[in-house]
Image (cartoon, rainbow, N blue to C red; front, side):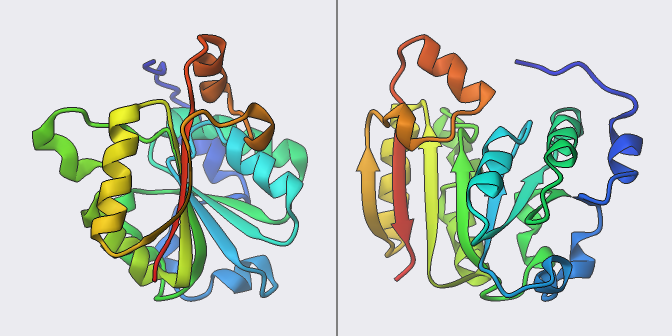
Length: 208
């Protein structure tokens, strides 16, 4: 669904202490932002923020970052973080292609890929966030044995993602082709698929 352009989205987020527009200035120093040594998890493509806010609310043992380039959606996430008054989550406006400009080697413990664009045409597969083009970036910024968790409604994308990770030498720890709702933080986006009785595909993998 295409979001209507919100002219005030960027100014609104620039006023928020929770949204980072200059992530390169925090490279190697994200723990200073959180003011503790807890492991850091990153969601790539956070959208309206339901998942990452839910995660941060439920688990105070982790710090969370949410990356999104669509400011129309992300301004909604900004409001949710502010309303919850969370201290263990920040949003980043940026693109996954620029991750190496944002993070030092080994800064992250985990990466979440939730309902990423499946890019069904073969010539576009290299744009997929689970493709080896991105896995090599994730490996550099993740700790040893860092994990990736992926959810999608697209079975072909799911199967290909497993193949990408195995071919890259990752260990696929867990897969589920019909993820129980009680085991998932269900975003507004995910709810639309579940209401249509569509299965949600899930995997967890780690770098060896």
